[in-house]
Image (cartoon, rainbow, N blue to C red):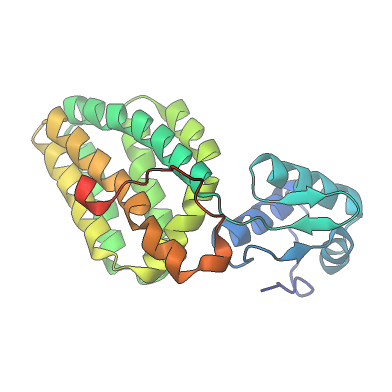
Length: 239
């Protein structure tokens, strides 16, 4: 799956590198650029009518996030999804958000709960996968910011690129209703000022992606690295 950018125009008022990074990162995370696809600095620079230097810098940033493999003398390739990195990202995210949601249950007022409910309603109405995940991120960001820990969410965002690739495959493959129901349970626990229940539901919610991971990997075997020997994935009966 290789994109043609020849009809794309960049906004001259916004830094070129930022735009290129956003476009390529989004397409890799959404699996529009599938694992194994080779990206060419020369071709992308030509399509966007820019020099190769900003493209090269973007490739380095993508490599730093684990979203591109730069192989000397061979080229740059979208890497397969690492099951180990997905589980690591889930572990970090759960550690942060379990505490965040407890604080939300202790601190949120009626207006903040209403905003969460509004975001949840928007998720119920949307059919587009990318928009659904955007609203999902908005929901979790609202929790962190509202609890006074916006930096914690920024840390989570830097860690979850591999997890997000699986999320896009998961939402495509499985019904969204379970995720929406869990968000509703989180809102209910916050509304009742119940930190213990909020934490319990959040942990179950964040473990769902890795619980579904074996089935997702089975459906897309060419997209994933093999699980390391001895690896223990969270299964549905564990949540």
